[in-house]
Length: 314
Image (cartoon, rainbow, N blue to C red; front, side):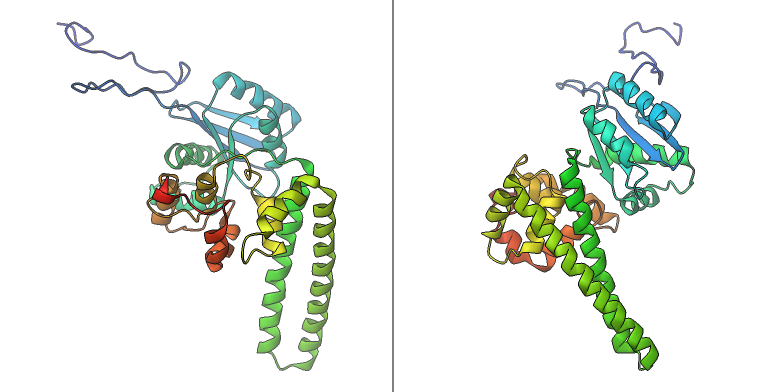
């Protein structure tokens, strides 16, 4: 009998990366064969280039990170129909691509670079090139399944940027306060005190801008009133939630709790976060700072109908 013959046995066609996703076909007694999982696309974003990898198909592409390259990539992805597209936050280089992917209603998740590095280290993928980074992102998306996020509108992006800038100023104020307490040199103390005064002034201006934007939006005002009704919920945390969780009102409270990272360990939505914790990064991802705040102030998440995990972990 020829080794290529299929007589008397179950055979599967060899899979080409051009023919679609790789399919693992196994025969189980009394069970159906598992359906193939959807394609996951990883995109490594550099200033001038986009490297693309598809898991598990293995297909790769290299395009320019400009209007023409992004348009070509989006059109191609619309024909591929991926279940998830994963890319890292790269300091702004990713924003035009993320915007076009969102407009095209493609499922995109922007993840924390450190989380991906931890995943790569844990899986033994230590080599570092743009092409390999795209493969790691695709593999990460397949294994961890980060949640695609809705595309924020311009007002939401501006609010998020202001909240992030406020967080940076608070961190700088804390660091400068520590330095002030550690030095006795009068000249240095004078400069630190001047910087602290400037930071306080800038913080007041940002807080005023945040309040004005909140009052100008009927939707944000309504959501802010609901959030502020939670015991211990202050204006800054309320604004942070509005800026960093556009999913509010679109997902269940259990899904929101899992997304932020305050769901209990037995929750089904917590599986990816538990895997991330095993990689040594319990608070990584776009909501890491928000998770840290709620972890320090558990009363707010425990009393919030938006963030409180459901009974039974479901």
